[in-house]
Image 1: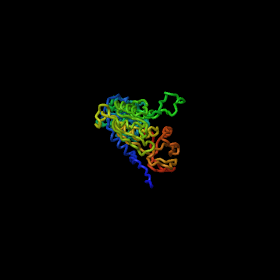
Image 2: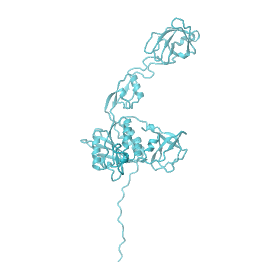
Image 3: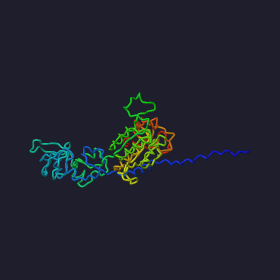
Image 4: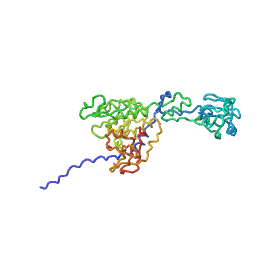
Length: 439
């Protein structure tokens, strides 16, 4: 009897994988989700470095508030220049900084010092190196003869030439620098209204992680590694002015991950995790976030850093989907590999934190530079290669570009932003991102 041919059962159709998200598209979507925070408070000017200004600061006076000398020298009217060049002019006044004098006597000069108010009827200041004293025993201190003809306005700082009364001196959304603090002090600001810092809960996931200091290196259990991501992420966040709460390492269970995320969301604007956002059986962050809110898990077309997640965790008692910052915390999940975590922070989290504070950032200003290396096997994803500038004006490549080699980031002073599939040969021009703009 002929038996029917054995036909293997058809395998279930594989779910189609979504295409990897382009970095620029993912960043645009992330920034669109960053509803700016508005809570603010006043702080002393000396404590405002790195804070973000909540309102425009408008000058209530001119700076400088009067015409003044920009050098030590002699003030005079250019109408008297001919006499000052030939026989010299008598000195009729001496004006230190902080002291006003009466009008300049016609046919004379006034000894004046840097920052001192210019006397009326004077329209030039000649620096003392271009003058000589003659007949020093003459009344009033002698005659002053010029060595070169003055021009009207020379060496004079005009009233309001730096800042005009009514001018916006520093705009809302500016992250204050030491220069801004000096500028604000020059218009009499003792305090400023700044946004309260973004509150970030930072947690790491993984049974393999051990905090430095809890065990000696030679006593590290088999299969364990010291947790490192939290240290550089916390520092990077604090450099952005964030208020960081570092939570304990979360064990690889769904229950503990869910509980940690829920607790973190209750008192923070952003929950930032590292690890657990891939698709392995021990990666519990995705289902935990989905159970607490919503998650858009981005598989980014970059290397390193493909696993990246963004979502929202609704706070207890809040209505799902309301979409107000009081009702949810932003969730950002970074890859567990340290270089991947560092790169995704630089290209995504840093601009996201700025967007939450309303800071307008131009982004990294890439520089064209010459590669002093070969990269013959590029990835199909956009790559961020760790490089360092050399004495010849080119870029050297760190030899091991693995996403687990944090030494490459510590060694580098920047990244090459390499397009997908782009071979690099020695001598090619590449796009260089300076590390100083990324931190």
